Picture (cartoon, rainbow, N blue to C red):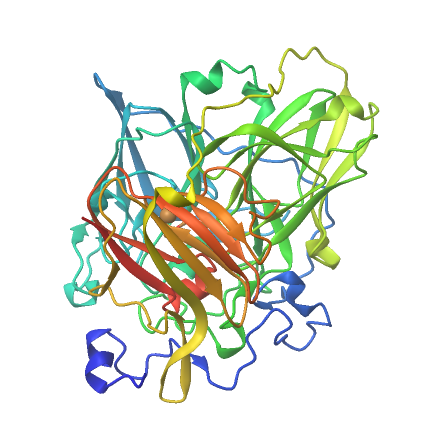
Length: 529
Ligand code: C2O
Ligand code: CU
Ligand code: CU
């Protein structure tokens, strides 16, 4: 497809905006590496490693931070009300080094919001940053006008010119998001979702946890309190003077979107942060812990394992996935986690000796990125938690539930313009005004998704998904259990996913959650009718 000049103007791409992958660029897992990148093949992820300009600290020197739980400003009969200010702040992420973050309430990760199933959560976001923002509650079953559509922006309090709103709604200075959260207990997260600029905004810090709790889950005696720990894993690169290093074409994020050519496939950092701290340490008692693993990285995928594994095996007992508890636990020695996926796991440290150090490693990484964080087993302690064989009543969807089948191909290419090649869905770049699917409210659809060129984690807003098959063997992969909102596809991979479009009518997006791909147009609309 040749894009016409008119298409360009309509998409807001006029003026040589460089949203595109140069037609000649290698964009794959074994792709381009900048000088000094070594032969690490981009470490199992689409993207290019951006090296830090300063010496990174030794791993396992700083304690794991736990993001503070946000307190409501008021509670009414059926709702909890919160306020968050998005602002620039200074943080000490690397010891002795100051890094500027864009944070929810000035912190990275943002404060954790905790909701009770069925109680409305109302969050007023005030934007004190220099650019518009959009807040999306990832995994939330949310009415369209509160879902954080990429052009429904909050203009900065300091003002913004309407012409840059791409025709979406522009709230002035603040917006109140209402979340019904009539959905099962789950680990959700919120992050920026502004059209064309999600990658750099999240990279600077606009991401936080939003946990939903309910009675069913609490009746299970899973590890709780201090033994229920959210872990947001991200990779970052730092400049010489300690800033987050991101290869934006326009570092102010007020002009041309996109990244420098070498990073079109994804931006990979060389420093792993967990809850915003480099390779941190958590002291644990010799008991069971629940870890809510979230990969909030822009482009990096991880293969997580424990080193050493516990005697007798079974490092991780998975109890939940993106959208809540599994029907039954699943045992893993390692876990592949793509961007935006969540794995809720229990690790039993009673199987280790007191004093033992257990490292959470990334088998896809090398050098610094081969390690994530460390646990130190400090002492024995009482533990009345357990992991029951039955966790939740989940009615699995079946092929015959689907009334519509769609085929979607995610690729680099299919649309070219000016010698550049776009990241596309069925050959088309994102257009806020084009709707590609109209599922009926309450219906189930079968989406056959596949990738060309590189790996892509595919995320569908609103819908509850289930992987029916992956690859050629007619079954889901080992990491696909449960209710999913993001499905990881390898390079050349394919999957059949069942999606239930429940809750609300309206226009939502689905997209690749490699944030560089998303910003460079690998996104599309569906409208629930
Ligand atoms: Cu986590 Cu549409 O995003
Ligand atoms: Cu989402
Ligand atoms: Cu992608």
